[in-house]
Length: 144
Ligand SMILES: [Zn+2]
Image (cartoon, rainbow, N blue to C red):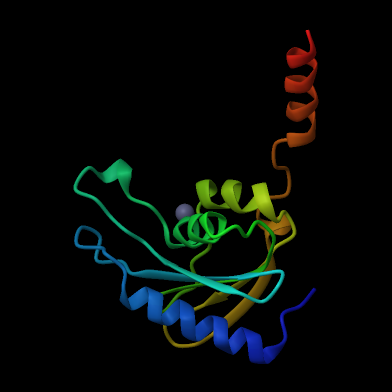
């Protein structure tokens, strides 16, 4: 389902605000995301870097984890923006995490200049792991 224009604008505002909150003293690359749940709630996220680089987390996962912690697990769309004039797409780890909850999520990419490109998670991440297979396997093992 395509996100209506009015909601897109709201998500873009949230993502831009979150981008300004990014903690990125090492890369100086600021990213913001705004995730909309299926019931219309918005969760923001920004990238949060760490001096132990591998502990850094992306804006998209920050938004997803905040939403899940608040009891939300179904998402309609996400806006991803940055302070760069080009489009940035979610990294592999974020695609995996987003796919866990909403494999067909609408992804709205927005540049710092306000240019917009819309895609979907199943286009960016077409062959996620078959989680149903894993679930059946663990149930079988538990039954033994
Ligand atoms: Zn990421």
